[in-house]
Length: 446
Image 1 (cartoon, rainbow, N blue to C red):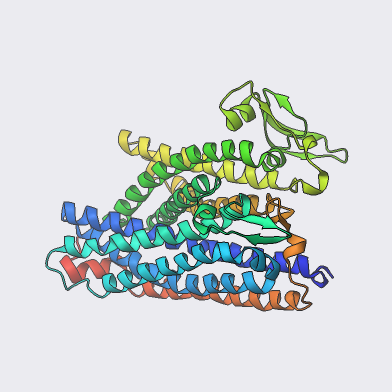
Image 2 (cartoon, one colour; image 1 turned 90 degrees about the vertical axis):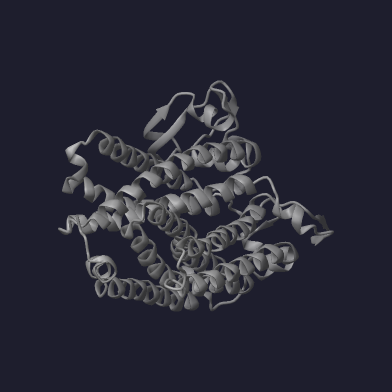
């Protein structure tokens, strides 16, 4: 059985945990910003609908935070249990950002608790709004520090390696490595984008179900427009990420693009498949686009996979992860741009059921893009766990029980996932928008 190999089992369990946790981590980073935006608009316009958005989103946010704490703790434990040699080598470097990530979370949690329990304690709602600033900052800093760990694994620096031991460690220098700016920016922006389309999907679904309440229309309008901004930002930062890869991890870029031979004016390869001779079939080729992505020059030379040892080249499957991420990103830009133009010009189809179903589809697609991006980042670093220094095989545990633990954790994640949906559904089903508005300002639904 595949689980008889502790390296494979360790990789599978890590993939399972990270793929589940990234859902809650994305929500954890993105939702505080939208709570803050909604409450600020509500105060500025004296609009109870936006105030209620902030209140309801905060209520649901607490549930996802609770589950995110569990999965985040599991990741910390699994680093030591599944990858002991990596922690032994790099622990003195990554201990600082891991500690700071925990500190950032507690900073966020403290102010979130105060914010939730002081809804009716401030006569001036602007003072209550100020409590959201540290919540949003804490959420962002939590993502910043945990992403730094991943950045270090891709671009290790800030130490000397003597006789296989990491000495003269400088954690600050290690944290601010070459991969950090693009990775942190991309994680933050895509989290905001994904949460925007998640909240938009919820509003669109309620409208599809027959609700014509102004609350849902305003929520949809707000989240689709903000989602467009962050979707465009994600595309721009993605371009910077391509240029980072071209300079620092050319083997990952070449594998993601099935770029086998070094050439000038390299085309961008989308979709397709490889035959038995590694020939690309049925692909879309965009002339010069890979050279532009890599160096901003249509005639620049892009290094091919032929320049790297086969055993040090990433798996070619990351091409599909790249295509998935790019395709969904472009689709969401188009969908939200169409919404913005449609609202401006009063196009009737913007309010049609079929278009709203596309918005609903945008939520799972956006999370799939997040997953594909992380799979590309992690699988694309193979065979290294610490690029150029330690391979995954060298870092993994030799325990024979990881496969069995994978089954237990899979069951745990199913329970947590189903439990999250059940609890959230019960919270909002028992407290519909109409009832909450009626209790505060008479329930104007026009």
